[in-house]
Image (cartoon, rainbow, N blue to C red):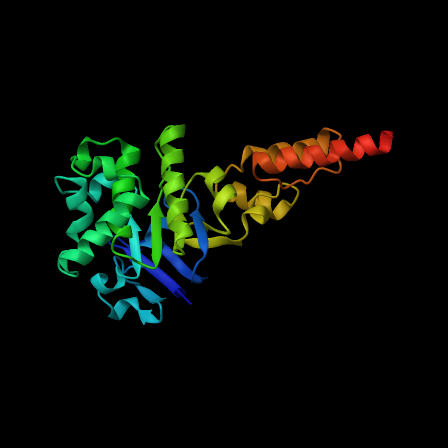
Length: 286
């Protein structure tokens, strides 16, 4: 098991209880989304995965190591964390120096150069390597932040709101970068409000509400508008399902498309389902 969370409680100063008895397992190679309203405990939970926060009560194990007894530096070699605001993560004068910074004490010069070149190539940053990261657009800053973490070769990537606050093209650029990291075999954990991203890419979704897990399962189950439990969970978590899921449900209920699946998640699925219904209608007519 890559990450194991057992009866986790966490209380911030001022007796603010952020997590209340969370139990969770994440396996190697999973693509997991953590969603929920602001203040629900999403980021607090994720910050326990690399030891930036330590449990008030309960345990978190990363590859079998108790985070209470393991330093952040050691945990960061397993779990890399990309913060929501890249300005909180970047501080060097060039993109190349940014990527190389954390590696200088760990690698030989040739190994360092190989890691930096690999990261620049994977994230399409070669043309920007000599520029100051703070002069770049928000999407490119996010790519630089991801590249700095990737170069350290962690087994787990935690990304906090990777596509938030960007236009369509910027969000798509970052989304594609996340998929490139996924394709290298990393375990991906994404904290997000972007339900289109969740519907398209996550294999499992964890819904946090008031410091507790309200749902832990597949996106198709969460967004299935035909079930009362799913609708209640979404309402409680203040989550709007993808428009494709809403449309497929409404057409099935009120639009005369009784054979249309009620839990379609992405436009491609919707178009394919309509095409199948149309072909069946043609066959019946013949």
